[in-house]
Image (tube, rainbow, N blue to C red):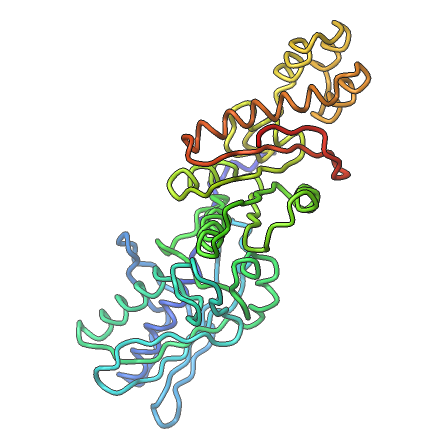
Length: 361
């Protein structure tokens, strides 16, 4: 039986930190933690969060509260993580100061929305926290140090793009709206954009965007570009190309498996298997355009995978022309998206990292 229930939305780390911070301020002012604690999100939603734990210092000099992140039905790496905030009052006129606690990273490279040396608590969550603290203070000034911690965050961050972005020591506190939309892959796309920002700030004229580790490793043997120039594109070709149209660099190499490249050649911007399919009919037509025997064309139309079509092309003596033509068509699609602002090269690899096709400079 198929489950047709709608996917459940969740809450960002920024929303969880906001709830914990607001609970802390209320406790510092009244001596009691609200539980659950209600917050106001940028688009007007007013969710309530249960506190996982809370403590008010005996001298009233600080308050700590935590919320367990619920990412809904999204496969978020931070789902179930504890988001901890400690709030410490500061002298009048100090304003809000943000600090990275255990498991929250620190920015070390230029190009991100925050300068090097700042805790990786993004502008969106900072604004959410500030707005909700102002509401809890009935509009009065709030002068406090806000320390956000995520126990175990340093290990979790190794599963994200933070190390490549130059965010060291832990996770980023993210979330513009406060809401996690299941399978929107917003965090990955956000990381792609920030990766391009970091590369541009580092002066990288040539970016290498790859669909996976095999293609990245193989392409890097051809072009030993610096770490900052590597963009972990995954399936999101559109996220790379559309962002580069607005924030161009001199040159882009797109590297991927033949199946992913064939999807891009077919005009797809999202290369995930659940959102785009290898077009066997189109692949068979490519072989026909190259003069392959009718039997080979017919077999390609019935093949299960793009690599199976590559095998058919190889048997017909057309492996390289076949893959090169796919790369040329993928490059044409990419050039149309970047609107001529970036020189684009496309390289296709097989599962062993062997180059099978290329197009572009």
